[in-house]
Length: 78
Picture 1 (cartoon, one colour):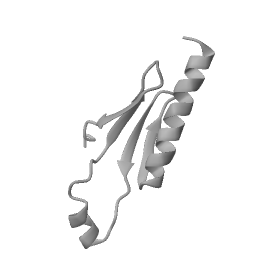
Picture 2: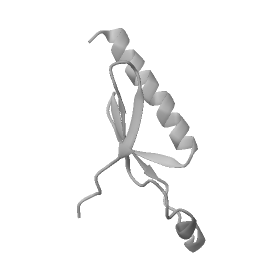
Picture 3: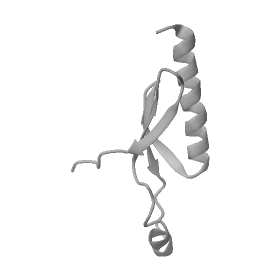
Picture 4: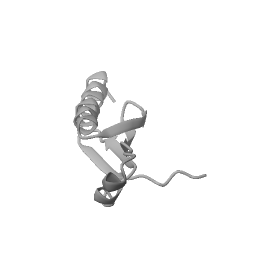
């Protein structure tokens, strides 16, 4: 993989994450090509009911062409 390709992937992930952070997600962890996003927690009782359909933890990945995908992450184990 070339350095230009790695830069493309890193930049695509950065742009996607900046958008999601603006929408209220936080970054739990990140590598150059993958990240885990979690929705911000709200302590309001009404907000909990409104966000019942919230997507929860999400895995964000960038493929070799710079395409970003987001899918549900496995739940945290206790």
